[in-house]
Length: 153
View 1 (cartoon, one colour):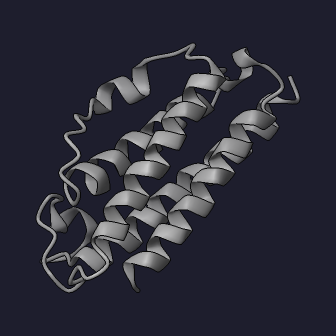
View 2 (view 1 turned 30 degrees about the vertical axis):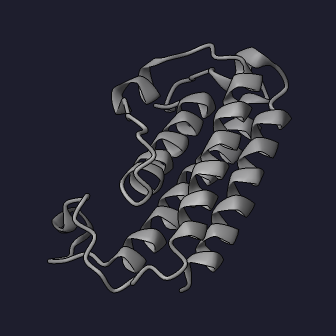
């Protein structure tokens, strides 16, 4: 995997996230939690953005982004327009980092995440980028399901 392909996939999927947020029927439904649902679409959106801005923008790109993971899951009622701005900021951070790192050796070790949590002894930058794509898409699917489920109420 080349970094330009990863950047293309991240941008495509983050644009899908923007569309998901826009498809919620109203502002309140983005943050609605019902029985059996642990996280709102808004919180999952913030989590995706925080995760990517930290592990790509800051760790690989030295952006200075400071992550507050607890806040990603505790804050509520942020307007959809602000969520979309955060997604757009994430696209910029990911694209600019990966474009600047086109020659990055994807076989180099990635030490900013505990490898054992992914069942590995050592993580490479390439493997971790693939993990981040998978992680983002897992939560994007949850948001899609949340939106469709909440829309029935």
